[in-house]
Amino acid sequence: MSKKILLEHINVPGINTLAVYREKGGYASVEKALKTMAPDAIVEEVKKSGLRGRGGAGFPTGMKWSFLAKPEGVARYLVCNADESEPGTFKDRYLMEKIPHLLIEGMITSSFALGANSSYIYVRGEYFYIIKILEKAIADAYEAGWLGKNILGTGYDLDLYVQAGAGAYICGEETALLESLEGKRGNPRIKPPFPAIAGLYGCPTVVNNVETIAAVVPIVNNGGDWYAGIGIGKSTGTKLISASGHINKPGVYEIEMGITVEDFIYSEEYCGGIKNGKKLKAVVAGGSSVPILPAEMILTTASGEKRLMSYESLADGGFATGTMLGSGGFIVMDETTSIVQNLHTFARFYHHESCGQCSPCREGTGWMEKILHKILDGHGTIQDVDLLWEIQRKIEGNTICPLGDAAAWPVASAIRHFRHEFEEYVKNPAVIKEVKHYHNMHNLATA
Amino acid sequence: MSEIKFNDETLAMVQSIIKRYPEGKQKSALLPLLHLAQAEFNGWLSSPVMDYVASLLNIKPVEVYEVASFYSMYNLKPVGKCLLEVCRTSSCWLRGANEIVEHIENKLGIKDGETTADGKFTLKTVECLGSCGTAPMLQLGADFHENLTFEKVDALISEWSNKAEHSKYLDIDTFRKN
Image (cartoon, rainbow over all chains, first blue to last red; front, top):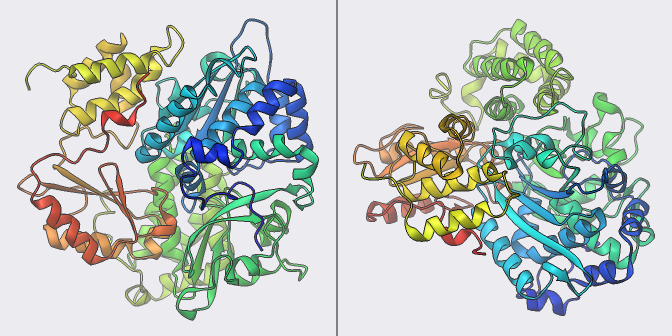
């Protein structure tokens, strides 16, 4: 059976409302934290829990919180990163849509722990209906006294606001998000200083993902040790996985860290196997930016063990034979899928979404898309495949933010594991017309 | 264009939004205000509209231009009354987004990025909209239309062919009044 913590009450009718959420024990963490715990004690519980950032990077949350500078007389901020834009990832949307008060409760408890009196939830602009849901839930929380002045008579004040983004993937990078929240282009900042020292408006700021902040609620309610006892090794707790592609049951699943990848793909409890009885060809396990792996490598590590859904097991083998848990955006491809064409959709995405600040990313992503287009148009050469490899190497590690790496890794892994497919396209352009998903790309040439 | 000015209700909302940020940091309201402007002024941001937004925030017009041109949700040229934004990134592509785009192109007689001669429909392909589990999808106004089939697309086009109003991707009630 799946372990449900965040999604425990997800199917309860009316759980999106304050009344039903309260009936199910909602806002208990606020009561416990504000009335019985010192802020530093909450930070310690989060540290003990082993919770790692659920946005993709997987950095220990408690440690990140402990870096927050606390100069006298200077405002501190908590900013929730709800700019979910990584291809394959739609878990935060599900959480906010179905159980918005869980995020709001997490924001209150976390803001108290961090000493923030104004907090913001930055939501990707396309999710306007989610913004509407959150605004309603926040208004209800204010009315019930969970937000505003002197919450629960404890003397703690908190204002919570929703900020709408406007369609830029780069704003999921924490410093670009802060720039955007300040009303500017979403250009990432050079670090250091890190946001914990100089973030929003130059003040100490913590930026956490939606799922991360939601997980603070059960951690405060049940203790860090309880959370650390769930999962496996340093991959503690549960993780929301958004599964899509050629599977029978796409959707958002909460898994206990440590189940096997095989179980996740094939069991009825989760993805329900490959659609139409086809064979598994490849998986992108953690959103578009993580390395793609062929079937045998995603199911089994190089040492022959079953691959697990955890940070460590998915990364086993490094980028040679492993990948990353990332955001949990799990894209499954069956045997009919053209890896080259799928890669083209990723390359186009990163080219489109590059902020343009760093030359390797701005120019490199464009060239990768163009070369892939050339190959898919039947005019590629073997030298183009080699050039693609060289370009991604020159982007990786040479940009201010990780978007460059995110653009490079899918290309590197696709060539590393599926070079034969690129060569097939180059040597036999006629194969292009036979591939099911091929589409006349006339309008891309001028994009 | 007649005098550019938000209606009274929107103006009140503008003031409410500006109060969300610390004193002197009113520029933070720029993105929400541009959304409101796009919604109220026919779905796109003309230079006079952007100048107006700059005046509301007491910032230079160029500060608005550089932001409006950065974010993909702001339209800097007119769009049709119905803007069909079809996602085409990986998961949508795996489940037939290209075929959906082709179908719309054939049905409306326009290509990606174009508007029908009667100004009714604009087709735009976009990058991942976070509907990967319910792919393929398109966004029309604030609504996500998911698990698309040709029949669903046909029904949408038919419905919007008979509407006179602009598809609104945002209504003022989206924002909390406080």
